[in-house]
Image (cartoon, rainbow, N blue to C red; front, side, top):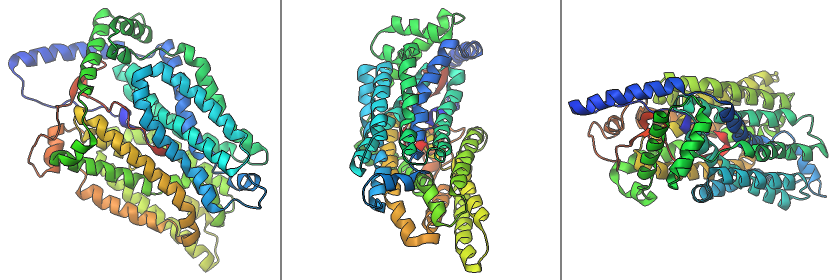
Length: 522
């Protein structure tokens, strides 16, 4: 769920005067020198390691209730069982918290600064996780999940934003990849620990383990520096330059530091011109890309991916799979491996092609899974391994397209002025859709049984046609070229600004300010 900051936009061709071309050539030469000299420093590594604890915790808490579901439901109440709806509330209310957290995080990040927000958010998350571990009833566990969701929602905004602001230009993509990778590693870790700690009272330890990561983040906060870009926004240019020197190392020249400070100032001035959601809806040239972004977020969540990470163990159990735990861990492992390869594919193949391939692949995978679950009992043959193959294929195809690409495409459909507003609205839709999937999947699974994944197959089939006929290709294209494709060759002016700025020493399209934090780490 947050590869927006991992994708670097390509430089577009404009008509410049001879003088402007000369200036650009000199500028590009300076940029090339800057990129060659920038790299990892000890301080930067410590800062990144500390901040990624938040991303790991987000992934961990997305999936932590999956494996020990049965034992927790038995332990929470004196009654023999917690009903499906109550359990669905406990699982899915995490997304409501995420929606709240990602909504309140931006003004807090601007008011108190990135470093202070990350510190307080880590402390808040530690307390919420400990409260979750000692919860004695359904209501208290639901409240704990809501609070954890608020913190994790804040992390989905703060972590990619902060990494994007402190990273050297040539490392920005790799650090964004680490953020996404940390989230899926957190998911896998929760699944692996689910079996040894899936007992009473071991499940309480399992639910509290996330506090280790948040406590580590708090302790390591002494190494975290304030974002130089935030300091520039506050007019503290001298302090920003001092901290940039610490992050970049002694080899960084004064000229390059001054270039970065100037680029941050330009981006900050541009972001003050952000527009409202109402403008996106009313402006006919903005409405279509906005609707495309919303549709892709809905398709991403309604494809059913979080049903796998929320409920796969129970699903495999009801499907009669011999080892549900193995199926869950394998799905998590494929998720990690596929995420790693997905980043490379996004940089090599077109966004649209991968989106279509992903949607078609998930449709086929859902049909394979459904066939195995229906034909096995009917023909009285063991097709459990075909079932798990269908799930693994389903997860892999998701990570190749419907997982990261909706965030990347949505960011690339807009210019700098409207991008942050559009991404924020699409992020809210993503959280709400994830909540609905988490809330409704148990009832759908009970009603449809072995045919549970057929609705997901239908949705991904629709997504494949939508991606092929409606979604424009954005890779390697300027904003005007993308707009021309959307509106049948009629270049308009949907963007209120050209969307170009010098960000961190690189001439590139201005990335979404808030990083488009969404649900489930996808």
